[in-house]
Image 1: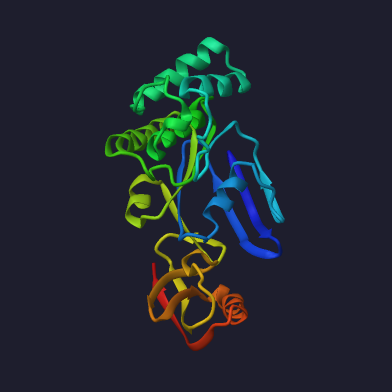
Image 2 (image 1 turned 90 degrees about the vertical axis):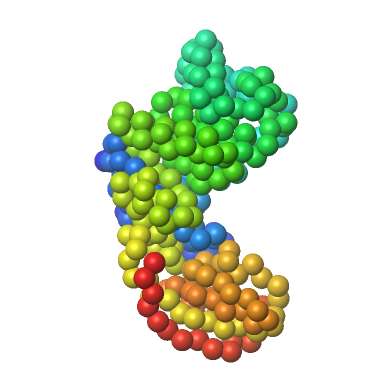
Length: 269
C-alpha cells in the first residue's frame, strides 16, 4: 500500500473530528471521499498527506506526496510561474525542469492571464489551477486533493478529470474529496463518506436522528460534526449521525437552544 491509516483518531481542543478511521490506498487507485461541511474531510486529507499527526491510531507509508488544500493561498506578489519554479526547486528539480513542468501544467489548465500573472491578481478558480499545478509538479506517488473541482471553469474541470485518470494509470494513488455523490462515484475506483467522524462506503445505510431545535445562538449548524442535513424555517431541523447525537444536543443546550424533538431513524445515503 502507498498509504495506510489504521484506527486513526483526531481531536482538536478535545473535540473529536475523526473516530477510528481505516483507509488503505494502493498505487494507481483513485479514492473519493464525500462529506458535508465540517464532517472532517479536510482533516482526513491532511492526515493522509502526512501534514497532520493523528491523536490516536497509526499511519504507514511515506510516499512522495502532492497536496492541494481546500483553500489555496494565493495572496502573493510572485507570478504563477515564479512561484511554481521556486516550489519545484525546493522539491529537488533543476530550475529549468521546474519551469518546464510549471509552464506545461499552467498551459494545460489554461491559466487566465498566462504564467506571468501575479498570484494576488488571480480569481479563485485560476488560483485553484496554480494549486493543482503545484500538487502535480514533482510527479507525486500520492496525490491528495481537497475539493479540487471547486471554482474551476468547465474546461478546467474536464481537464482535471482527465489528469486524475492519467496519473492513476501511471501508478499514482489519488485521494480526493467532493460534495457530489454521483460525481465521486463516477471518478473514483472506491468511494467513501465521512459521517460522525467515521469513514464508511458511500451509499451505506447511515443511522441518523432528526433533531428539532428552537431559539438559542445563531449557529452554522451545517458545519457542526455529524450534521448531514439542515432545514430551517423558524425552528431548526437537523439530520444528525446517531454517533454524534449526544455531543450535538449538549452543544445545542449550551448555546441556549430548546430541544423540541428527537427521533431516530435510518436513511440510505
